[in-house]
Length: 173
Image (cartoon, rainbow, N blue to C red):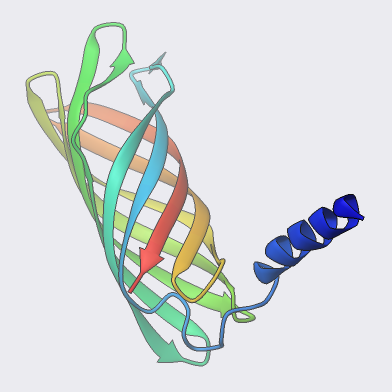
């Protein structure tokens, strides 16, 4: 009997996340979150290391109607990450725009463009990136997602290309 009650309780708790959030109320408004970003940079045929690091995310989602959602986003990575044997990424700041299509009420697929500035060693690099991703609304306020971004950054002829895989958890107000 106790096992049946425990199983029913667990099924009830997990089934709450299966209910879709209300249409038109997901992915819009102010949001805050954490991204776990793993990036690998290449330069002149040399590959760097793939390292994971957290990023703070602030964004604002706008509902354009017809299931179209635009999200303006700012990210900051403030910790150091060793990206090659002799190179350390000291910080990274990114401003992005994501244009998405709401599939049902709880799934958003999107494409994105971004502009970024990063300090590697003692040099500031600037560049752009583009990518695609998906977000899932666990509830009206909680989102999880994944994203791929390809970035190009440069400074005085030194060019770095990066491939980033990003996992996202966020809260929308």
